[in-house]
Image (cartoon, rainbow, N blue to C red; front, side, top):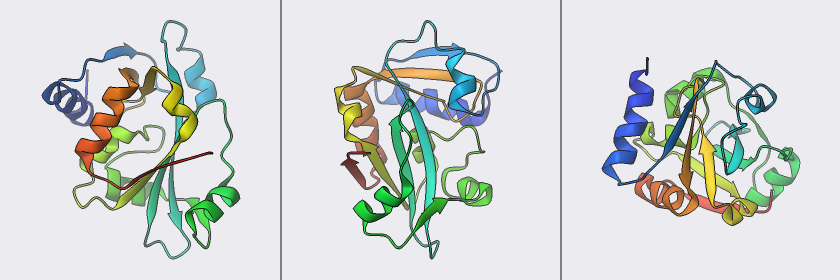
Length: 164
């Protein structure tokens, strides 16, 4: 049974004319748990990290290949921030209307003020397809990378590609 959060993702993709594949699976909270369900899913799988700066007045969604580890110190330098850390579940709910374990760029649908800045690992530009949770951690949705870029453009948030 899909939730309202999940339905909103499919409605948005349909409205934008973006074709997608959907695989349902048990709830997963980490990349390691999710890997067990990726057998038939083609394309890049991603880690999505919701971060905040030290003052808590800037928030970032960092998207990188699931096999990479995020170097928050290096990312802090590249973004010219004082310090980045993981944002609280309360902040995640406030800005993206998501719960831990379901962090996804599809949460940008809920960021009406465009406050979350998106940072994407530039290596993902080489992927043909890219996979994310549809704002719940019980499914994985795959779309073409060109459609993902179109989705991001539609969202209107600030986007930067960096080597992560």
